[in-house]
Image (cartoon, rainbow, N blue to C red):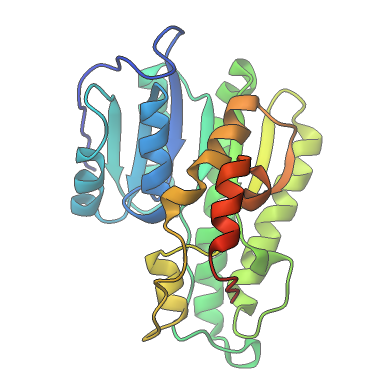
Length: 261
């Protein structure tokens, strides 16, 4: 386990109110790193994780001066690691927001359902479905008490049929339905599932090995959508980041090539 503290939270949009605490999984790169930085800028104290401790430390070194972060290297499928995340959040005052961002694509190149190795499919469901549900269960008592929120990152592969995306899409569809039911059960907690769209991330590169994905927007481009969702505390439900973008940002997104899996 790696734990890093980088000072006391000062400045940012949350400075005038009691510190808010966010738990962000898979924060060493891509969308998780972009969201962690945005939350730190907005005054959140952070508990973050990733499997690669060195990459996580490097990512957190880029946070704004004065940010408070507990960075724990570990595997989200490990119950003891999930327990460490809960204890770290409690040490900072209790979680207000959980972002289930950590995930796995599965085998690359993407196999057809007819050829999908079942052990790889089980692993994908363990990371993409079981682990986020288990972490949500651990944090729910505190989230209920604080009127918090759970945000799970999903994909259009959960609702559309793309050849090769059966394993990943099936896992995300399962996570989505679990979140949908959770929203009906937890009236004091916001439960969001957000499709960020195609982004220039390592996972997306792995889905298209050897191809140039430089036409996809960077993860930072969708941060305004997540900020709006969290800041306005929108109703529980499924959202597309493109639909939440401010008008100016939507125009910029429209200028990007429309590339789907």
